[in-house]
Length: 244
Image (cartoon, rainbow, N blue to C red):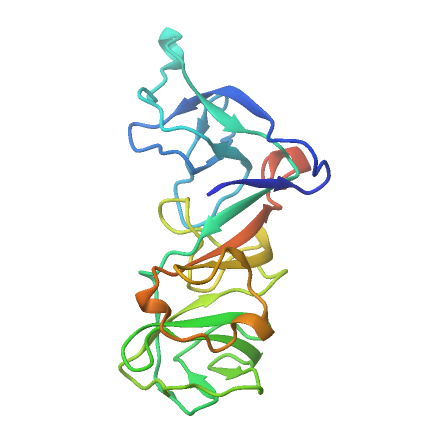
């Protein structure tokens, strides 16, 4: 992830502070940092599970030393963006994919997916129909129905995989590195999506819009990337329930 803009003070830059941090190893720039109540509560740490409670800010550098020790007063610091109204842009990882069960030219079927993801996007990452991007006009827990203006150029099948780019105002989890947006369904309301973006060799960086991007093809040969703007609602500056 990286800082993108502020929700309120849009003309201002990120609020950056040197913060005491802790991890045995592995902290990297772009990682979410959280506060932990109790012992070592003064040290910002990486999340330890699939969810991200008590979000504090975004780590802006990869620290050379990070294993702070309170008992000896050995504290290491790193720069962290602390804006409580910051919007962070996260790239979508592509390893955590949905297996397509079957498909018609207009409806993709998967074993299970979030209900009511109308307005989201799907991208075929492997198998038949690879490289096609589609806007989801309607959805239930097993099917995604394409925007009615154009069907698949090449209909996917059971050999195909897809990633799911969640719709605006939906919840969004991060992957195990806490740096990238996770494809599989969000489990908790820790952050929300404000917008989605695309960038490739032949498509300039910009927000995903159906009339521009629905049923683009050949993106697998164009180093395509997808991103989402995320706002962390489980933020200690906004009275995260578990922190207070």
